[in-house]
Length: 340
Image 1: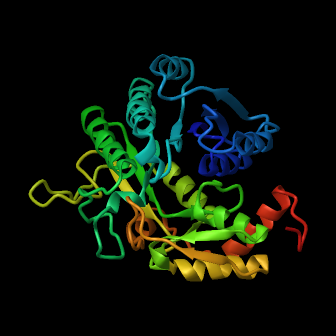
Image 2 (image 1 turned 60 degrees about the vertical axis):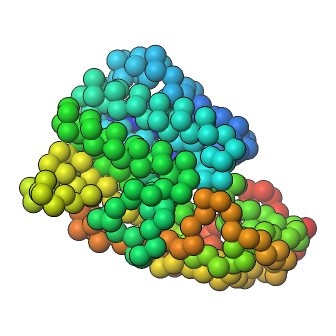
């Protein structure tokens, strides 16, 4: 297949593109290489993709309407895997315009491209953050998600609604994937797994928010990729049992679906830090901090809908995932054992 992967220099986009290339698909990857975090990491990821003869990279911003229109006019895609976005809950408090431009305007451009390009299936990244103020866990795709607690979460919920309108109006098959705290090699340096790893290795103190009273459904990148690719391959279809009298929030009479991808095994934050300490071989200097705006206390994914649809459920244990992540970190940043 010929697959468009957006955010191809990003954490999840890079890994998914590599999987598609390895199995023989043709991948067109786009990314604007913005400086939200260290661009050298993004370029290093791209360096691993460029040797593939079936890979083509275009530096462009999917918020650029004219550029996206031209992209779809000059390419016929069998699938679109939209993994690019302005990420980060906390940064949305500082720069909300970036989220409006990328996650709303940009997603609208992708939908229009898929519509006019008659793309057979659009798969896109949503987020566990859409569950917002919900407290009943595990989070199910059949729960209402109408109370986001950050602008980032609101844009991801909006993406699901925008996709549904296109699925309904134009019969464009779309599938949204709610990712739960993804970590692993080549991960984002602004996220806690790599922040903690870097600071513990360096002997620097780490901030532990909400005094450590957090639990997250940490999900290893290989599991995320497996779920994404299986979903890309399964074109969304209308739910024959969907009823307008009792509407299921996870499906529709249109070819539209949403699924959770999570490990379904929440890990307490202090236990997570403990796994990093074991992998690094050094204790963390912890500084307890209050809860930050936009944070939720606990996440846990009910993945039964994903398992029923594509026969897959994430299962990588936290100690295995952290071990691989820390090993990659040391190799990439050339840190010798015992070095500061």
